[in-house]
Length: 67
Image (cartoon, rainbow, N blue to C red; front, side, top):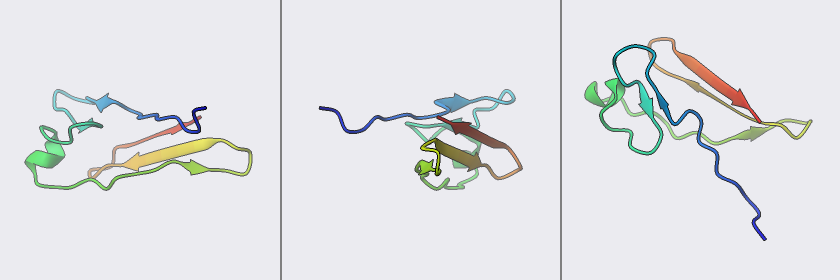
């Protein structure tokens, strides 16, 4: 029986013509070109049983999801 699931969100993010984020290969993004390392994030669970994750990027971009 499977006791866990893997959810990566977003897989990749292009808010402009430059790749801002890629979950599996963090190279080739605007942050790796500037030698900025993004922290690894996990999911948080709230009292209602929802899982949520928020990523805040340098420069003010923020993206989040609730499952």
